[in-house]
Structure formats: C-alpha cells, structure tokens
Image 1 (cartoon, rainbow, N blue to C red):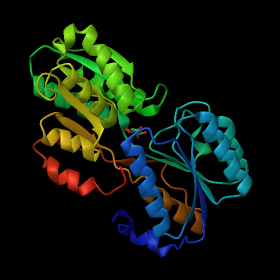
Image 2 (spheres, rainbow, N blue to C red; image 1 turned 90 degrees about the vertical axis):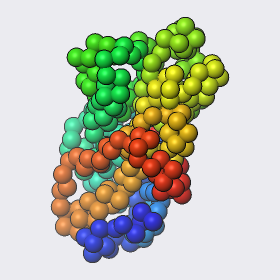
Image 3 (spheres, helix red, strand yellow; image 1 turned 45 degrees about the horizontal axis):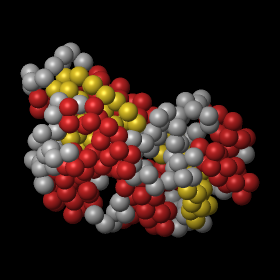
Length: 312
Ligand code: GZL
C-alpha cells in the first residue's frame, strides 16, 4: 500500500507516539475522501496518533479545530485550508504555541513563516496541462468552453482558472463562454452544467466542459446525457484529480482527459516533520507534487484498478 512507500529517512527517524491534529475540509469530493484515508494510513504506518476534525467545508470550523489542537498541545497540525484568506490570526496562535503547521493540498494568503511547509500540486500547472490538452485536441476548430470552478476563494479554483486561461491564450478559436462554481461537488457540478446547457442552445453550442475537479465533471457528464447528448464526443470533458470514476468514464468514452493529483500529501508532511522534530531541520517551504495528464491512451481500466482501493 502507499504506507509501505515510506522513505528510508522517515523510517530512520521514529516518530511513533507523536500526536498530530488534522483539520480536514470535509468530504466534498472523492479525492478528499481518499486524502483522508491515505493520511490515516500514513499516520498509522508511523505510529502517529492522528486527531481528525472534519469541518464540513466551513472555515470557522477549521479555525475552532486548530484552536482545540493548540489547547491539547499536539506536536504538529495538518491543515487543508478551505479558502486562501483568514488564517493569519490562528496560525500566529499556533506559532506562539511553537506547534509546527503543515498545509495540505491548498495554499493560504499568509506570511510564509506562519507554516512549516505546504505540500500541494502546482495548481496553475494543472490548469495549463488541461488547457493545453484542449488546444492540442481541437486544433483550429472553434471551441466554446464552459467552466465549472472549484470552491470560491480556494487556491485550486483561483490557480486552475489562471493556468487554463494561460494555455488557451493566443488561440482565439477557443473561448470560455460561461464560468461558475460547482463547489467541487458532483451534485452542484451537475446542476450548474444543466444551466449551461439550457443557456447554450440545449448544449449544441458547447464544445467542451473544463471542470476544476473530476467530481464536478462526473456530475456534468450526467447532465450532458440527460440532455440527450454524448459526453466525450458531442461535448469534450477535461478535469483534474484522476479519481477512479473518471477513469471509468474515460474507458467508456464519456470523458476525455484528467490531470492527476496524488491523495498522498501526508507522507511528505510526516517526512519533513520527522526531520524537524529530530533536529529542527527547516524543510523547503513548498513541496510540489506531480501533475500528470491521463487520456484514453493511458490504460484507463488499469488506472481504475490501481486507484480503486485507496478510499475515494
Ligand atoms: C486540490 C484540492 C481539491 C481537489 C478537489 O489540491 O484542494 O479539493 O482537486 C477537492 O477534488 O475538493
């Protein structure tokens, strides 16, 4: 399992018995559920006592949880910050309590000395990879795109929009006609796509949907089918996360491309914490995970098998 992929350095620095608080956003997407599952596995493999708090996507619940961890005197705090702003005060309280904070999978607009490190993908690059796939696929053909954005104010939503726009800039045949948040969920993604279809001639004028995560893409696929259109051919589908269900859709020809986001942000987090606890080693401030493109040419059925047991 992922837990056996421990780096030798991490194994060398025994951190069993450490208590780590984890302020998780919630379970808005399959990817988030997998991140939680893998984090529990990585903690268990290291003998770390993980205190888990689910915020139901509310920042105030995350702030409350972090204050609780500080009061408990935990050895470190992991935070997946639901939005980018509003963290300075609570992160300062953690710093004053000398409790290291590691950010997972999203960033914050706060001074970098308020957290030990951030483990995340380059979300602008994810958007670029998705946009470049569309540029390469449509060539000179006109292509009207509709965009399902992630959670408003979150770094993935801001950055994935920026990256996609960078990739299609200079290709005037590709335009983003409509863009709205689906909050990273299947249900909202389906609902917003239904609105886009109604507004665009029953979907006949839509060439592609770009979804900031696979869950919204899966919702959009259902809306496209309900409208009597073929997802993957009448309307191209490109998204991000590489969850098992998007590989099922790609194998069926109902989705076209996804950009991988590893759910294992906790492994690198525990590795740098082990070094920090051992001798105060300060890690690099940003640990960037890989963003790999997958299409129907990349054994989607096999990729489904490789991911199906990771807790999505
Ligand atoms: C991105 C992460 C996003 C995923 C979504 O790093 O924060 O949040 O892409 C999840 O699936 O909801």
